[in-house]
Image: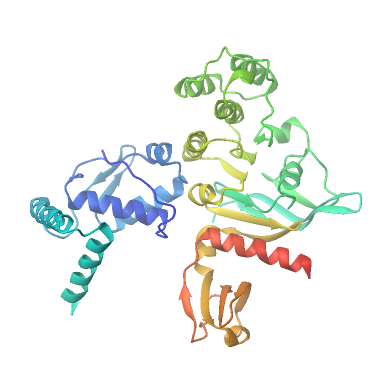
Length: 126
Length: 291
């Protein structure tokens, strides 16, 4: 089962952080259709946040068509969001890990690596 | 929209010639977790004591769960109150406190509190004076929750706790809220904690209410504007400056914007977080008092 974490200094509203973490978990295959999301009580026990924040996140995920609430039994994953399959993502992730290792060997620190990624993203958008 | 758990009108408390709380108008919706914030001496504890009937108002009135606050069983049975100093009998153990709770309350869930303390690994037989600060706070919270209150008033419950004990305390609290039917008002100086557990905020400063609203609309209504210094005065109708910081050539303004108002051009716009907004209101009150 997925566990959530919360970054109070990121500027991203807490409910959106939960939505993003579920989406990410779906994309990389940590969560799959049919899986149950933790109950609101389980989430607030773990991260100590307002229960309404979790309700709101789950409602949002429901509206996106990714999960469905079943009365009395909880919230379940309905489908993966659009995008490449977990296998494709994993392969891309492996490629990137290789590239990061190369960059570190060349003496780049984390900041320089992030800057390069951002520049590459920027160029690809043109 | 739900019901209102707390409503005050012109509520005030005077000690001699000093108004500890003045013209306080707040409204707390049922089911919310409200953060009561403000500098020391702002009137937070005074307000909580008035709401629970431990002190009588010098002005105005309040309705708490639809009733007038008073030290009477009919009123108090639905209310849990945890004072700042965590009032427990240090030489008695948790089991003694549970026995007392059973005798003193019409409704007291003994099974709940025993399970709860067991989950938290808190020994029932040890005098509470020998428990850690975090454990003592948990015992006090569990005792308050065992009454199955509809409203819980907490006066700086986590002030003296280490980060882990604080997290555990807030986790117990949010769990109780998740079970439903509970409204919480909690005063604290730890804005980051309040941001995650609260959905409503009350800012008191200089004995007056500066802000009282649900956090979500508050976030939408406030903006942080950065622009050239000369522009600070020409913001137009519907824009209220809450706090301004002036540098040589630049003004940084935290403003409240009425719905449908168009923002003046020439300003860089940022989304403030609730912490910045609360600080702005507290700063405004301080400057107002000094003028």
